[in-house]
Image 1 (cartoon, helix red, strand yellow):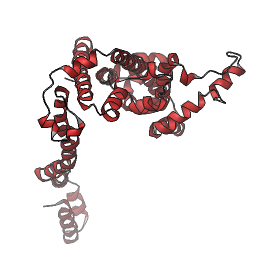
Image 2: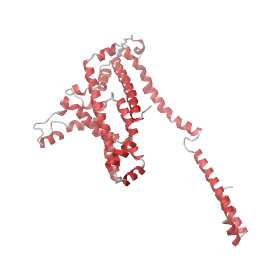
Image 3: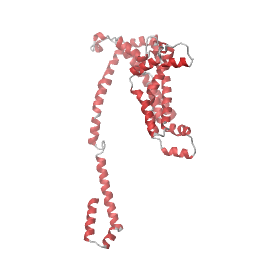
Image 4: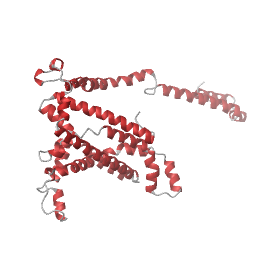
Length: 357
């Protein structure tokens, strides 16, 4: 019997047996206990029905969800997995004149492409530039992203907090072609904002052509990337901070802890897992530069400090059509990334008991 049917039966019983004794019987413990049991049984049945129709709960909806992965999986196979076959060009003497057929028919070249690359003095310089820009940039970016996320979390006014987040997220969606042009204009010797400020402060006398000075390029690349990506980099840290138990902060308030003490002793330890994962990803991707940024900011004057492995692959592979050498550099990058990922994960597991695997 449903609870609604029970209520209907109760009304009929009241009409049939009206009088003072009827109300007393309806309020009796036995009658109320039966009503509670019927209501509870009906609620359990509703919950079961609701649970059964929940997306992904039963086999039918699981198959529907899995089917949504098919287009993405097919695209991944076509554009990411199948092209990996082209890595065999690193071990062949391939010429673009031979076309696709040459991938299979060109003679084996052994490790000659690797010998040519590693014997090139320019490659050593590019490796230093790649590691230098990424290593220094990652350390600064991670530290600033964590600090900025902590500061955003301390903003009490929710409207102002949303404005700050929106303003800092927006540069991420600007193309490097546009953002790089803004940076080049600001650093220009002819009316550039930075030169005007430095001259007004009497720090410099004559304008400095920053983009033509190789010694300034690392700083320009790191700072411009920080300005563009700082807000976007805080998203994961902000999400992790929002999951911290608020009772910890309340207990700290009772103990008279300051905001900085709560940040250092509650917030940071609670998001340690997220920080460790982001550091591991940063170490694993240390060989991958932001190609768009460096290609836009690069010119013939700063080439000594701006040429990195990614721009080298573009020039050798697409401009000079030496696909064998470009494939060899890609294999070198991939092997080194796997080694760095494994090493960073091993160190993380030993020191913090947190890691990817």
